[in-house]
Image 1 (cartoon, rainbow, N blue to C red):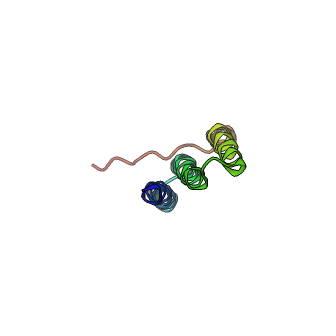
Image 2: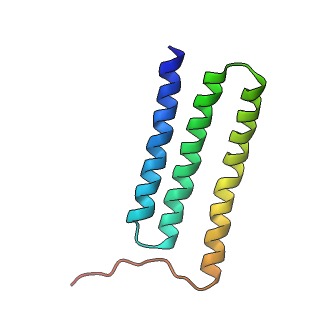
Length: 101
């Protein structure tokens, strides 16, 4: 039963990594690409680390995994936000869809 739960977490994590990669390749500008990868990578890494923590059980490695999980949850969104602000401050404007007549 534990293996099914772990496989669910790992599969969901891989799904979020794949969708973030698709967003990186398909979205039109830097800001939307960073948004897709920032959200997808944070969620993907979180789910994979949760699966690994469940698989490891109550061991010292689990505490290390949970510390990594908390670190990723706190730093990844802040880093993406800081990068986007820095890019915007340099004069790069967000993509605007051209209206067709």
